[in-house]
Image (cartoon, rainbow, N blue to C red):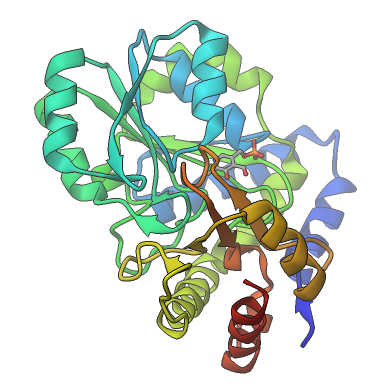
Length: 328
Ligand SMILES: Cc1ncc(COP(=O)(O)O)c(C=O)c1O
């Protein structure tokens, strides 16, 4: 079994190489930027978009519009939310969740109690379980809370539940690797409210992306629906294959996700063994928990999202299951 870490497609690499020859040509640079912005808008259904130098830069731009307090899930979010709020001096409120997934009643109560101006979530809690984004958006709308969805893991959702501007005021995403739009670098932000961009005009200018990344993004985003669908399917298959035992169980077994978490004791030790037994050329696929970005309990995550989708055939997935069951 050869597992490969995800890389940008040859088409994207070629497009970036070609664009690099045109650096300094303002007209061509603008064309690359415009094309990338159009692609993003057609995917997120938002009217305005900007390509930025990273996902965290997109979070920074989004948060620069907030006066605070900023609400985030108590686990399964992205640590950049916390870092950026601290950097901007904004008060943070952590809403309790069910292993990262937001409970709608709890959210409503916490919003009423704390009066935040925004809620930052990732489309998938810890990449492992879909958030009920539409329902969260309804609550935010009713209470004048700006919903910011970090869609780094969900661009191109065929169900249009996630990364869809119809139910997110602002969408941010990283296009660094290994992400669903896997350019290797960069990020983006989109919204229907152009005032967000006007107010953050200078910051956006400061953290804008290069035309080279824009050229790569135009190619990579076309592949997002297929890449996401294959990754979701592989995770669904894996979740079914893992047998729950006394000392180990799959978390969120029925929810859509692009990685999967197994709760177990001594995750650090087990991860060390697993990294030896599951080799990934060019990177890795094991994360140790507890960690805010995934889940606040002892567990390991199998980061299926890190793998080249060509490796996600059933034979390989079955082999991964066998190795994991033997190791832990
Ligand atoms: C969900 C999520 N959001 C944002 C980021 C930050 O992206 P970047 O590395 O492009 O700043 C990451 C990075 O891994 C991420 O996983």
